[in-house]
Image (cartoon, rainbow, N blue to C red; front, side, top):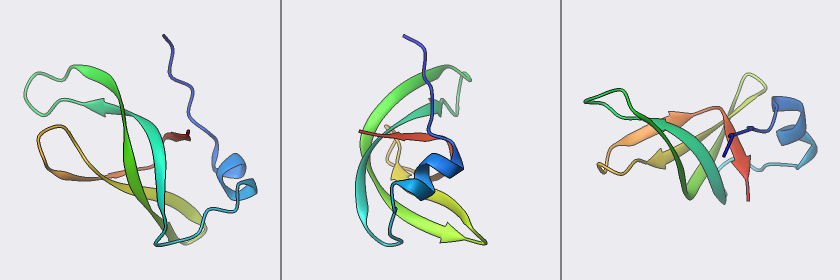
Amino acid sequence: MAFTPHTQEELKDLNIVAGESYHIEYQNKDYYNGEETIEKGNGIALVNNGSIYFNVIDPYGMDKMIMKVRIL
C-alpha cells in the first residue's frame, strides 16, 4: 500500500488547530535498521511559521515531529 500524505495546503484547508489531537497516519523510519513502516496513531498538531507538524510517539516510545501525515 502506497502512503500519500496530505500536502501543507490540504492540511490548512482542514483547519488544523494547534494543540489539538488528531488521528493520523504517517511514515515512520526505524532508528536501528532504517526500515520504513506506515504507522497510525494520535498526533498533537503544532503550527510554526505557517507549517503544520504533528508530535507523535513512535513504536519505541520516542517523541517525533512529523510533517508528512494523512489525517484519518
